[in-house]
Image (tube, rainbow, N blue to C red; front, top):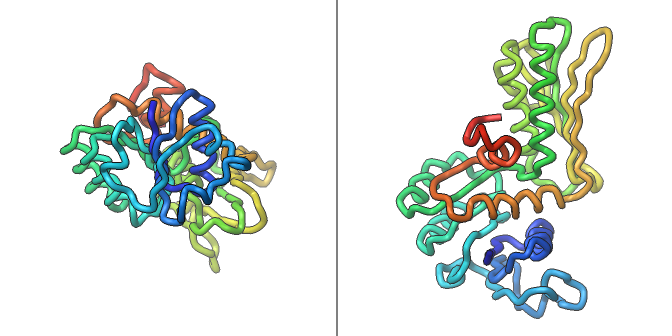
Length: 273
């Protein structure tokens, strides 16, 4: 499969390595910070040494000739315009960029008109989605036990720009569906006691932690913790490549849940976790 990478930061480079390791070819790399292909040193960059992609600063349809799937980890402001380019080129896409889903209707329309496939989500790590299922199951087990209260805390490295993370919000949505007593997600600093119906999601930024998310089910008697600790970005990057393999040949707009459900439980394709 021929892949285009849109966004070539740490995640894009890891996706590059994993794609090559799974037998794919990376034929195009697009990132506005690229000055010249020679800025990637084949002697120190395993991805560049193993392949020979075309490097460009801006996405254009001609860069997608022969491409099967584009994998994008870029900026939220660029997603809608980039999807129009994928659609014009007839190329499927995996969108791992977050912060743009208030414009998902425009993306859905573009994808439908072009008859291409697109899958998007805040976290493509298969392990993280197993965690979502385990956390939701734990929450359901205490749903009728008034003594337990639920909270969520997440930790990320000091360079992460958003807070809370998209993964934390996804976890909160799963927990909310499992706990009828919780009806809203509260992500701000609380200078008051939380309301009983609020699921408080708190965040810490600092150091180099690639991502730790914890659901606490707490009572006066004990505390139950369900935690997912990412050791690196490998899980996210590997999941994105697997999603590219999955979306190739499909048409329509899908969420990462569709991909994960099909991967973990093929008999329930398209259902929500």
